[in-house]
Length: 289
Image (cartoon, rainbow, N blue to C red; front, side):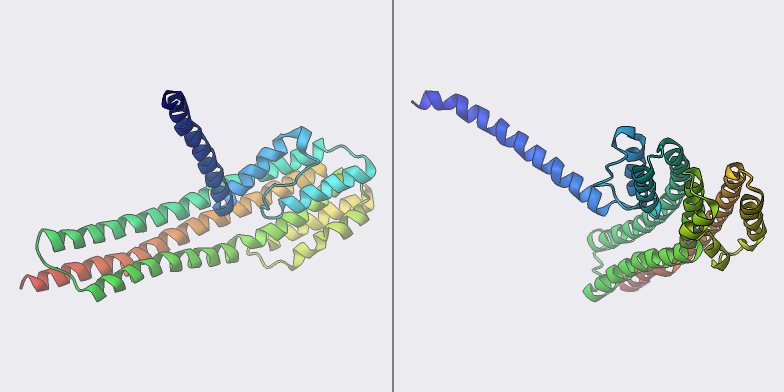
């Protein structure tokens, strides 16, 4: 009887292993989706836009800035009036491509800064271990706790400061692009210009407080006037206007990069270099130097 159980004993570990791996992969994917950043969400949304056969079902797609609202508006209008999705979706794909390029650069900048902080912290803590084990100079426990809290405070305050910078510099562009693309998509869908202006709230652009945007107010007024009074097609003019606004956005991203670089240097000095120098001072003082 026991010989008959041997094959079972051999097979069961493999079955358990496969179930465990499947469960582990499932949990990992759920964690990745739950904690993924804006760039990852934008990538998943763009991937769904590439699946032309699934455009009308956007369930399970993560929220990324204002794009989901525009997609749902386009789909709803298409379902109501029978207009094709190809043109509006191509417009959104190009917009999302530009957005993801900028978002990737911003994310890499933040992650590289955090990487520098972690490297500086690791060097400091390795020196603490060396001082304790090799030199026999034990550091005070209260100092170690304070230093750990100081490093954590440095990283969290940096993330908070960066998010504030992004809100003040870039987040206002989300509303700006929402107005522009909503107006263009409505015009592409065959909606009359007055209804497109009302539904897109494009006039609200003049109320946005974005540095450098005032220069483009007259351009937008001319585009709308040509459409209302002369009935001229404005698709080409709107495309050029969008490209100029994207250039303005990229310029603000470059400014943000400069600000982050300066902030990174300041944070390294205040939160990490000071703690390293404090460790060196305590070690030398303990050695009687």
